[in-house]
Amino acid sequence: MSSLQSFTALGLASGSELDGLRAAIITTDGVDVFDCGENFEFPYDGDLRDELRQLQKNRMKTTEEQRQSANEKFSDFCIAAAKEIVTDNPQINLIGWGGHIICHQPSEHKLYQLGDCKKMAQELKIATVGRFRNADILAGGLGAPMSAIYYAALAQNMPKPLAFVCVGGVSTVFYIGQNGELLAYDAGPGNAVINEWVDRHGGMHQDYNGRLAISGKVQDEIMQSLMKHKFLSQVPPKIADKSTFADKMEHLEGLSLEDGAATATAWVAEGIAKAIKDFMPEMPEKIVVCGNGVANPTLMRFIRQKMSGATVCVAEDCGWCARGIEPQAFAFLAVRRCNRMPTSYPFTTGAAGEVIGGEVFAGQD
View 1 (cartoon, rainbow, N blue to C red):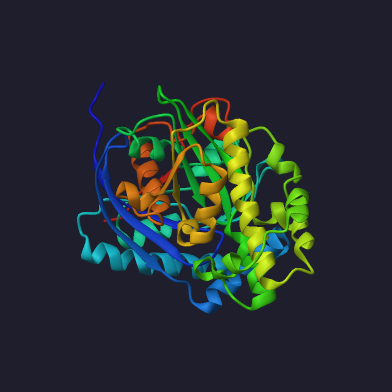
View 2: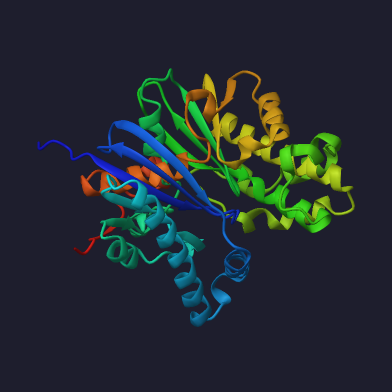
């Protein structure tokens, strides 16, 4: 077997919270991570954020012209950001781009994502890998979660069993067993339910530092109702998006701003705890939390309370950047694609077999 090629890859990721583009540089051969370079963030301007929000809200009901307009603006924004990074880091020789998901309903064979990979490759003259989910869905998978194999690479030398929790718009959990076995699935609501509540009732983008939640009181009766959401009891593999939990948000109406924030935050933590306790084959000794959720100390306190039998830490405690792991993962997947290695598995996405996902767009000299 020929040796694997090592790349210095730039990863790009955009989440449903619409806070901006995240980017990261890693050097890897798709098995070992030799170096984690800089992490970058590029906040969206108001117009682009609003356009993306409207697309996500209306999904496929928008016109082709609206989708094309958003795709062009989003792509140009990401290409400009990547150019800025590559100019200062000429060693980059591959790009892995997660794009931006607008509609992801694999059961209905619907997947619409923004991001012109061909244009990125041609303008930067660097090979770009994108559309990682398509092959997985064609193989009967859900097209997500896609990052499990990267978490396993990060955790090569850590005691197992181990769990990672990524709190973004929704919460996703990853299990790595004592023999390296992988399991990944969406756990339940994430920051989106908190952000939606404080935006609607307080005119705020988020509960900064969990200050509202820590001032409020969790309403136990409402929590019982929230935890009856059918998704939380659904057996993996499973995925969710921001709209999955929207029908339960009306249960918070009538609460004070603080009590609603506290109850929504507790819902996120309880959903994560249930997903770990109910579906992981063995209780993890350590739980590493990453994503935007680590910036909310009230959420972190709730998670620790619900998972008192395990050590709960944040990515930074392990020497990683909590917000940088997702773009790093897409860089890692791009390298695996170029080295013809699987990017998803039956136990991470529900695909029929191992899938080598991603389309490669060659950079033009």
